[in-house]
Length: 134
Image (cartoon, rainbow, N blue to C red; front, side, top):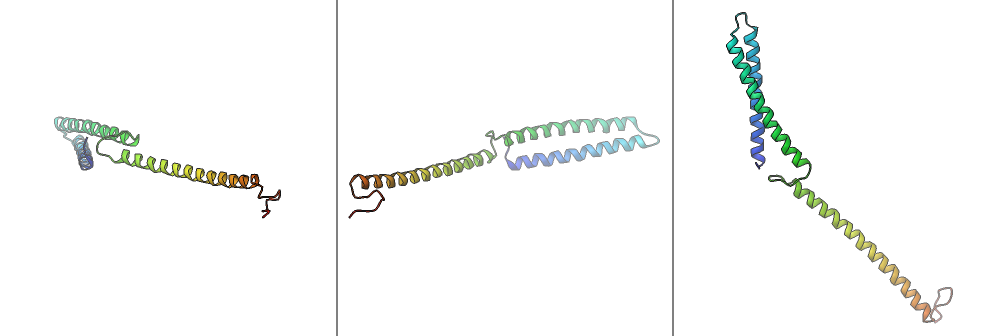
């Protein structure tokens, strides 16, 4: 696959081809607008217009196919999109794991506090109101 600079060059070439198409169409119309128009010249300009237009269509289709691959996240050469997506998902998973670890710490602290209260009651050091007898 082509890198970013090559892709930009291809787009620049497509733009030049579009300009050529417009120039050929203009020349064909100018020729047809003359009182004594040359059918051969008009046909030549029209033929060149159609050839160039076909090339533009083909090159644009290639660019659209490339952009379709990029936008769907399929890995492909020359783009950092897939890597960025993987990194973003890794950060999301990291935050999810952190939230679970925090939740487990909270549950552990709650369980230890309950266990300490239960141990204190079973040792006979606490009254029914929860105050110490000593």
